[in-house]
Length: 111
Image (cartoon, rainbow, N blue to C red; front, side, top):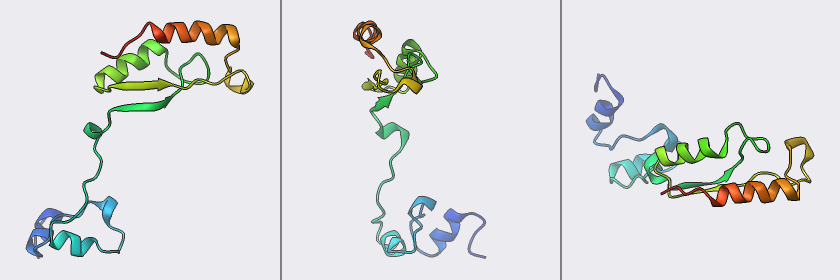
């Protein structure tokens, strides 16, 4: 047996370990042999989120909770993308609610 773990088996074959996400029966074996495998994104590579809905429309969390979660993830930015009044099934924002929500967003910062 070449090893008791995947890493040991790959090492015994002279290959870099191939993450499951890259195992597509294309050229990953050749790339592993030359240390040319691409870098997979990790949570630390993500700096923000550009599509978030708060509980003002159809999201689950409040704006304050989302800001705290973004800070915990060390995000540099988030975009609140709640629905307009046209999406009535998602409690879309009419003009009055939109301005109130917009002002509450303007008062928050991630830093």
